[in-house]
Image 1 (spheres, protein in one colour):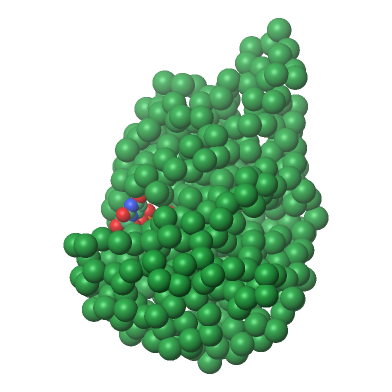
Image 2 (tube, helix red, strand yellow; image 1 turned 120 degrees about the horizontal axis):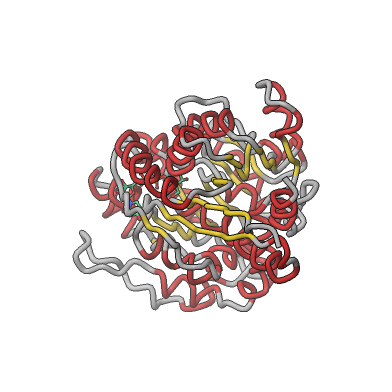
Length: 402
Ligand code: UD1
């Protein structure tokens, strides 16, 4: 029997967790079926996200093993997060001596651990490589570029991402077109999500915090009928997530978005807005809390767990988001996606590539036009090549033969 292949994988923030879950599962399946070529897997959490709703709940729901190491980095400026992570990660790498370090996505943990991996002369693999928004104002774009430049193996979700890497001069033998691990997770969890009740989800995640100014209105009135799906003949509901600094950090921008959503969308149908901690804090500090808390038809909810958000997405009439991964989930589910960004690193999800996402920035005319036209759209699911639920298996098979 050969010595086990030692793999150290890194997660740090919410969008990483659904990417590592299928990878960890694929390693277990490999070990069960091929004990001659065992993989010894260590999972490290940098601790960039630490609230239960942003972190632990995903480990439980997606069956991700407890991290072997938790660096407990927490919040801070980008330099603080990256610097603290690099320092702590360096000693872990020296101690564990992995053959490969695996990073996913584009958060600060991805960037910090990539740099340390290469400085410690460990082979580095990036899952979800090659995505480019070409917008260096996004910290994630910097993280993606640094990580890809340093990676020895680049696992890409689609052909456009592979083309980006080629254009940057990445040698062909480092690139592997394997598909999208996020969709492995979606496929593995969709039956569990389908069994959930939409009204229960919204009511149990509603923000009712007597210390918040002011106390929120009761969610009891109206009951479950507010949340029936369009397919049952009722008017349906809209979903929203917003967390990017470009949308939530300036009072005039967040204020005008709040005006649009409270005056227009909430008049048409219930809007379920799941609040990232940063967004919630900004609504309060910019004096917008009263307005959102007292708007009829606006349901403010805490960050959803994975299955809850998937269930809501499956029946939403329209999704407003500035997230990256949600564009991909909307694409596969067919939910019209009004993307409140000026660019995307995931062009394969755009309408012009047969997806469902339309970029609207924070231009209210464009947001409204796209919203109005999306109301007339049928749900149109689309799967780009190799978004088939088996991406993690392909990655593990590639690593063991490398
Ligand atoms: C990070 C990622 C972003 C991803 C997002 C998903 C980077 C550069 N950005 O942004 O790509 O889309 O996660 O959420 O890595 N906070 C809490 N509890 C937590 C985590 C954060 O209250 O568990 C608050 C803190 O006030 C913190 C703020 O949220 O300062 C922002 O968190 P941070 O990790 O810095 O970045 P995100 O905006 O979450």
